[in-house]
Image (cartoon, rainbow, N blue to C red; front, top):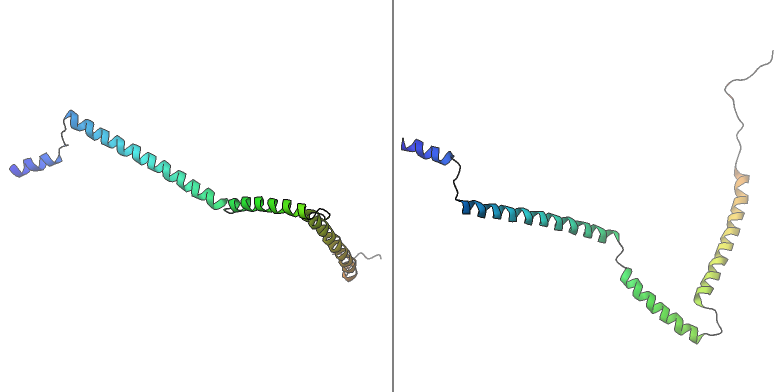
Length: 130
């Protein structure tokens, strides 16, 4: 019978004092809050990494380069007072390139209609007059 009593005791729920129950409850609450905060931190970290992947990383270098180019332009403008600025020269060069490309496209457009062949329209039924 002693074996049966031991078995029945192991199946019974554990008995705790009030202090032990409160300590376990506090531990469970701490674990829950820590897991929730860890989950929130992990989500934030994933979002931050995802945002970093989407945003270009060369922005700080470009800002430094912009400052350097502005300084160089200012120095060049002081040295070349009688010359046009590089921006204006580049703008004019781009316009000339556009004009030349438009002229070459016009020549190609003239050639294309000549090479097309028109097919006669065929209807499914022939009409015969008797």
